[in-house]
Length: 151
Image 1 (cartoon, rainbow, N blue to C red):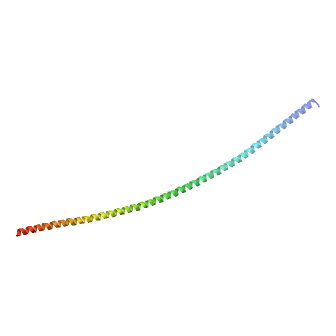
Image 2 (cartoon, rainbow, N blue to C red):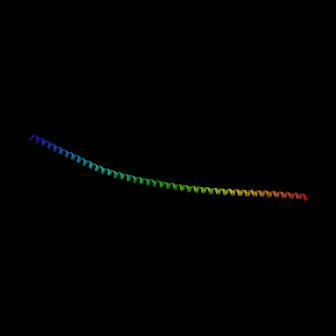
Image 3 (cartoon, one colour):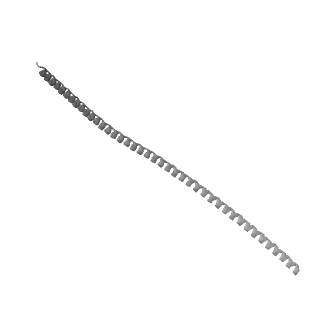
């Protein structure tokens, strides 16, 4: 074989080797792109799962918060009702106590008024008796003086 043929064959070999190398590089790049796309799809799926999980957690937390809020509201309303009942009972007791105090004061007042009436009546009778005695004494003196003058 001649040197030219050998050189041509070497060049052809080099070209074939170059083509094989280029094809392998392309295959590696295609495989790499496939792997990247596959990873992106996997990450996108994971991201969607995380988003869904996040939404579910958010809904659960929101629901738990609303339930807790309603339970607290119910508990506070029950306490408010209890306080109102206790307040109503206290008001009723105080009104009853006030009514008994008023009745007692009225009875005491009536008793004092009756006592004053009795003492005034006895004072009036005493004054009338004193006045009557004075008039009787004065009449007796007058009659005594009249008898002296006539005698």
